[in-house]
Length: 165
Length: 165
Image 1 (cartoon, rainbow over the protein chains, first blue to last red):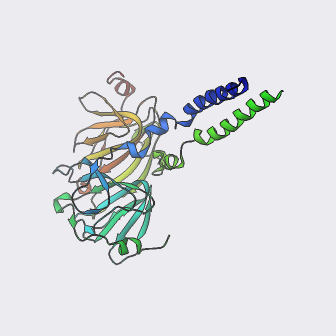
Image 2 (cartoon, rainbow over the protein chains, first blue to last red):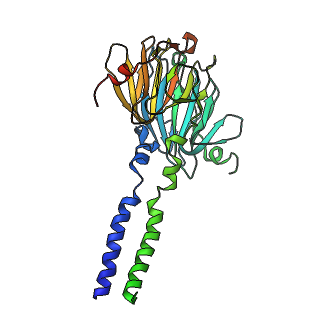
Image 3 (cartoon, each protein chain N blue to C red):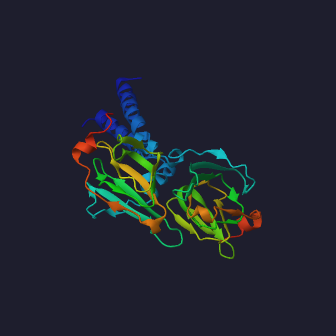
């Protein structure tokens, strides 16, 4: 390599090195990455989900707060089975895009920042969209009434059969 | 400028241009900035806070979920008055750094990702640290028991008198 080549390569290396630092998101943003606010937890192996979903329990049910809180992450295409909550459930979507559907109603698109109320005993499912993961905090109040009753899987036809995007 | 100089400058410009894109946080990360997950809401003008705090109610209390959920943001130095929750409260810290203290116990430092249980009827306060804002989701279960009872302000001595950082 001639002298000019060496100079150019060195120039590239110096600038790339500098850019390496600029290329990272600022620390403050990294700290605030919602995927890292609460741990992703472990793969849910209960058999009540299609695809890969993760659960980190934040608050287990007890007789003081009567509330169970979990951080749930669905990989693209993953969704819960149909189910209902005797005490109801509130979803706070913190990342990504997904679906929420109550039996007999259209499938709704849900996104980061949405708050969804799942009324007591109303059969429904939720999960990620096919092209995005979804993370939500799931708050189950009134746990003495029962947290969840699981039903049948959401078929591909049901999953894809909702509102066209 | 000679030919070598032009080549080097062009090389720098091309690499810097490329780095310009790398230098920005990826869009996905920007979308996930917790400050924008839920709205900051309005300044709390109840007289039960010192400094500037904001509240966006996410779920108002009702007789179905028996739970009230709010997104609360404290500016640096801002804090609640002493208070207690007859039904207890759970705090999910989503951004920044702050303090939580129960009466008669040391002041604790709380950070993004922390989950804090405020037991029923235990007098306490929470707020931002002096050098950082704090955002948390406040979940008040058992609302038929009463959401909150407000007491006296947290003095500067109390605010600064906790554990040294």
